[in-house]
Image (cartoon, rainbow, N blue to C red; front, side, top):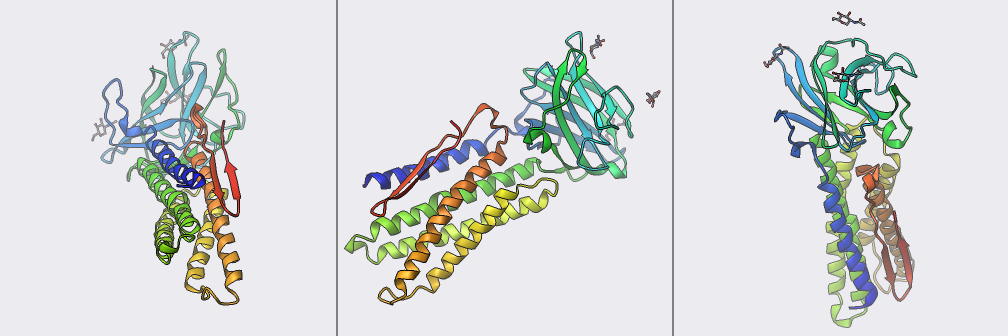
Length: 363
Ligand SMILES: *[C@@H]1O[C@H](CO)[C@@H](O)[C@H](O)[C@H]1NC(C)=O
Ligand SMILES: *[C@@H]1O[C@H](CO)[C@@H](O)[C@H](O)[C@H]1NC(C)=O
Ligand SMILES: *[C@@H]1O[C@H](CO)[C@@H](O)[C@H](O)[C@H]1NC(C)=O
């Protein structure tokens, strides 16, 4: 096997294996509370390594909740809140936890009514009982029982964190994660948007389908066309292999694309415009390629040369864009990188045309 072919195949395998650990990252359901409490619903919030757990009791409209921040610092404050007025800080009915001057985790409620809140203790627009904060093995957990009403059964949630300076709360940073820490929650149906257990498994399905399609099958189809075509014996087998590879890539890709659009429409507050737009462009390119296959001129036709140029350039553009988009996808799954970085170098050497590129990310 030619060296560059090996590189390309190896890269595909590497790409696939990278998708697995990122999709099996920590989930809310695998966590056991020290007090052995069990919650029927839980949600991996999409940013700030945060998780929400709850039991909703329809008979008295109360919800027992636990908000967990993993990898919490004793020098930070943490807030989880409901905000019927919007996906924003202003108007948030918040549960606040921090380490007080005696270095003990403590929690109280605070209603955020200004753009630079002092976060002093105040009552919320609904009743909160059994409120307490617990700090165990680096996790800050806020427990509470919320008395919900119609307006609060399906509403917005906002979570946030920032540093303390002595006994004062200082402003949180304006990183992308601190801006993306909003979503919706439906206590009755047990769903949240931008972060349920269900939606994160949808994200995984989306990621795996697309990585298999765009990251593995499509480059493999190109490799087949590129390298098997030159062998007399492989003619016309290479063509059928190539067509089969690309058609299955297209079908799987369309399924992955559909799950992506569904994820997008399920998360009205959260926009990943770049990832979405590249995804739509990729879908158009791939569809063009399918048409190109159906409308290809005979090999000896005088337009066949132009068709080849067209088919190859769209094909390479698709692969280049799909690599960019897979990385965009990784960034969405893990926006904070959490200390780990995806390091990958893809190098395809398309001998004999020597079109090659290197794509690296992180360090
Ligand atoms: C609400 O109902 C649940 C179960 O029906 C019960 O366990 C809980 O104690 C009740 N809470 C209040 C505040 O009445
Ligand atoms: C710190 O928090 C603990 C637990 O909530 C509380 O018992 C204690 O009085 C607090 N200490 C101060 C100085 O606020
Ligand atoms: C908060 O509510 C409780 C009871 O609902 C009341 O006793 C207390 O005075 C209220 N606190 C403030 C600051 O309004």
